[in-house]
Length: 137
Image (cartoon, rainbow, N blue to C red):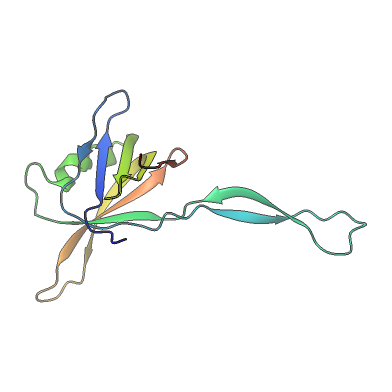
């Protein structure tokens, strides 16, 4: 399946509807890699392991930066990023699979700094919850 058509929406906790963020370019990997913890009894002939806490790693989305205009992702998220406000996010794939989570967004810019180099808007997420996966019906 292609990532084409993937949407990322946000809402303030306690509100009902998500607002889609415009001009999404790239989405991060979603991989909850759990830490492998060695827990071997002294009588064991081989090491034994358990899985500990997971880590989704760096979740960074990239958007087209359209300048400091109204109704752009930059303007929509800047106030929340500046105040470290927790928002609820929902990433939805074209097959209907949804990934929902709470996070504090941080915004910045990716730029090469040269002629004909695109400046992208970078939105990094500081997770504040587990990621809930909802399968399509």
